[in-house]
Length: 249
Image (tube, rainbow, N blue to C red; front, side, top):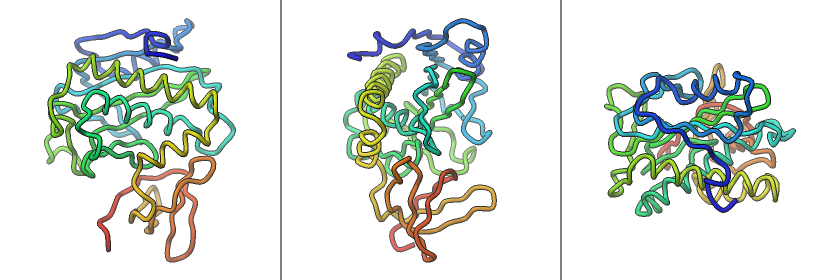
């Protein structure tokens, strides 16, 4: 897998309601959709995780891809969030190398710049396919009053290439990490992810539904679940929203 041209069929649009919906329709069409990549320069109805809307601050990345689901594996969480976030992380760094010391993955697959969200990933299953939607604030971020948490844009680190160039860097990253997962298994993905994520010992809060757990990041279980060292002992968490807290909080 030497480059995205070996894996992806990239289609670029000036505007779409949702790149993930476009891919979803392609999966349902009966044709082989694996390898489809869809980029929209403007997305009017982007979807985020947990039913949220993805807000585009303008000139952002709206990219979705389709892969075969057979690699998902038997573990509780699956490797897709980690493969996707590694590819996303590496792709953004290739586009803007000056972000090296400021970019970080937050469990399982958000991207943070200086601790503020700069990119998000939506992963969906449709029949034999996995759809991965990737959104990033490139030139600008949404207005702070429109989003619940602090956000950043990649341009805070320097000049950002054209969005199609950024997309191709991300596709290269996805192809690389997906290939390594297939060749070497999840253990290598887990190691690489930990090197790019919030450090062990980072204070975290995990919430979702009736769940609210506060503690310190203690690494990943072998299947990718988050390990949280709490006052009540070690907790292993499969899903939830993670908030990074200030040291000493």
